[in-house]
Length: 247
Image (spheres, rainbow, N blue to C red):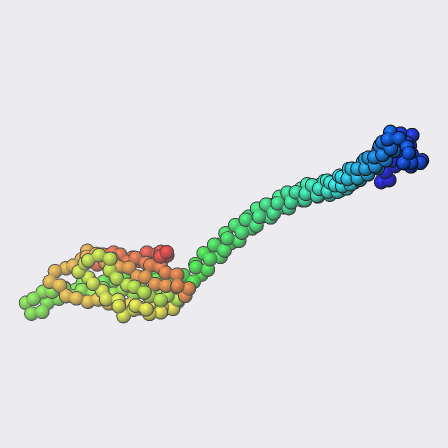
């Protein structure tokens, strides 16, 4: 910025001649006063020029800051606009994700149900099952003058389904007929195969009606565990229940 300083030269009366020694004291005072006035004006103009430059510098700085602020404001406005657009896109993406999650949950539920169905189907395919054939005899015999009863209980188990590994075989209630099945523990029993146990004993009195109550526990080829209950009474029909899975 160019600073133009205008002043009126008429206010300055610069003496054109230097007072001679014979000049009066008044002439000298007037000359010195004029010189001092000139110096004061020069200093004043300098100060004014200096202050004007500082003010102009401040104005230039503020103008620059204003331009930068406007530029930053415009940039911020663009960012806000992009943010709004981005938020809208984010909202759409979130909605899409929610829909996908919902579809995934439904799909997972379908697969879970299918898995459970297949699992149950597989269990049924490989599940062992024993069928029981029970017979008992009670013969009245004599030995000299002594009369006694020859008792016999025969239990035949046949695996009518898939392979089983017998784990336990024990009676559930105390009774006079205790059958030892320990020899069959940990034995594999394939489909169509059978094993039997016969128990014989003598008694002085008929023992009809004595409770028979046993449990057989076994595993299939995938280690699923099952049990079947054998119950009845000696001299009466003895039955075996259906397989029950042990969880």
